Every structure is written in C-alpha cells, then in structure tokens.
Length: 320
Image (cartoon, rainbow, N blue to C red; front, side, top):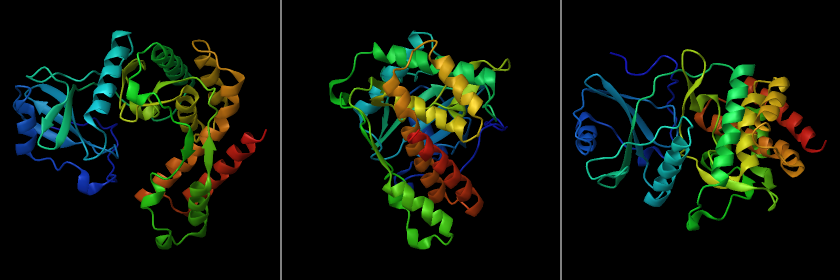
C-alpha cells in the first residue's frame, strides 16, 4: 500500500544530514507509544529540507509524524509554532493542529529528539498557479496576517526580521566545485545582495513559506489544508507576502502577480511603503531559492541563465 499520494514530490537534499532523525520501525513505534498507537507501516516524505517527515499508517488511519532535526529550534519556538497553528484553526483557517500525547502535550520527547504528530490531510498540490487558486491563496494569506496582528506575541520573539541576506544555503556551498561560469555568477550575486527593511513596516508572526506547495486542495479545488509553519517568525507582513509573490513571479505570469495583490488587498490593504518594498524582498527570495538549488545540485547552466534573467528583471523593478 502506497502511503504518499502521487502529487507529493520526493527529494533527497537535507540540511545538516548528521542532525537528521534516522527512522526505523522500532524508534517510530517508541514515539507512537506516547500516543497509544501501534505502527502498521511508514513511508518517508522527504520533500522538506529541515526535518524528518513521515507518513504513518495505524490500521486504517494515517498520520504525519515530524521529527525536528537537532539544533533546529528550541522547545519554546516549537510550542509557539503549534500554538499559532491552533489559533488560526480556531479562527477558521485550514491549518492542521498537532495531536496531544498521553501526557497531554503536543511535543513528544524521544531522547534528544522532539516530535509532533498530526492527522493526515487528504488533498493534492496544484501543479501550476491559475486565477482561482491565486484568489484563494491571496485572501487566505491576508486573513492570516490580519489574525496575526491580533495575536499575543511572545516576549522573546518581539524582535522582527530586518536584515535580509542569503547566508543560510550559500555558506554550505564550495564555489571551487562549481564549473559553470553562469552559476558562479549567480552565487556571487546572491552572496553580495542584502536588504535592510524599513522599521516602519507592520510586523507580526509570518508563515514565510506560504505558496502552492504548502497548501492542499480538495477535489473541488478549494483549500483543504495549510501546511508547514516551520519557518514561522516575527517579520514584516510584506516579507511573507513578497516570498509568496516570488513563487508566482518565477512562473513568469505578471497578470497573476497583480491578481494576487488585488485579491490580498480586499482583506488587508497595503501601504505605499509596503508596496515599494516588494521587489527588493522578492529579489532576496530569488537569491535564496537559487542558492538552495545550487546546494542541492539542480542549478545547471540552463536554469542559472533563467534565474539570472529573472534577477535582472527584479533588479530593474527595484529601481522603477
């Protein structure tokens, strides 16, 4: 029995491989025992780069088990992520709260590991952006930001993201191993680029990775689940918005960018300062994703040329 739907993309690249959980039937069962469950079958869903995610079968029921990699985030940050997901779900958004274990806790400790268990959500990922999907994503995104604005902020997370600089993926890349000049050029641009966000931008807790790949749709095309709040951080809302816009921009359909912005603003209007900040943040996102592709080995000469072209277009928009 295949546990993963065909629409789930399988990748192999992980950050900090040595710090990743190595799943076996035995250690998974030890975690599931904390929920009173007995493992029938499991399958590795390796689409995420940060943590170990597993699709778990327990008789006829399916669950998603996430085991955070070592040193990924402290328990207090995991707890905030889970509390924010619950808050959004209570407000009517299609988030997926974690289940509690036999001790009444959402976070299960297994030795030095931290795990959460969630109900499996049926659905599929859209293969391409289209107008109806864009409208749904944009209004949901804006609603999420409006709700975040009323959420009680944790004291230790009050300092928002301000300086944007890609040093997360590129620090793992040895430029001496890169042969193609165009790839070297892109990496050099990525490492040199930085953006200081205006302190007057409205801030709150942000998903920061809200795009079609982190949303499930039902058979009617409606959003059935919002996934992966692992990047949750205090940041300007426009940073979260620009990250999402980039995923549409790379599809190179500017009409959908306008539609996303127009739909978003039916729920949460944007200030001129926010609108002016978008291109520079999108360029930062572009360099971040491009650096990730170099690290995972999928940035060939053809892809790099396209990414450089898009970078040039975004750079021009930053000055117009």
